[in-house]
Image (tube, rainbow, N blue to C red; front, top):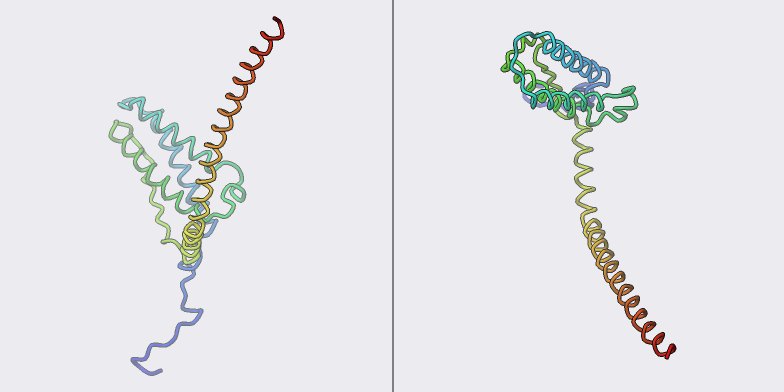
Length: 186
């Protein structure tokens, strides 16, 4: 080996965590930990004798718990079918849970569940590639979306004009029929 000359990268040198997303098992375990901490925080609140929790906090907490349950409802193989956004959604729910946990602590609830600290690796190469492809598709389809918006506007305006024209024809037909009917009855 010659010192000072960098050797070329081989497949053995690639970090699989930088190529692939976190595994479904890892994301599933972290989701289970989040659900357990949510349940523990709820248990701590209901078993707390001294607290100053507002109805607003409880309503927001209930909405959060409902959204987490809806997000993770059903078998995970179906719920998180592709799993491409699972990591990002889990991190978002982590931040929201930690915010609620802090609010409960400030209200006097003795929360025993630790803060949720799932820190997944940054987006993988495949995630970044998918994101870039999505951005490129959005950019490429922007003119078609503009045409669709224009056609939608034209269709709405055309429909209003057609309805007005039908109303006008109905009015004129009725006026003519009243005039002719009066002439025939004389």
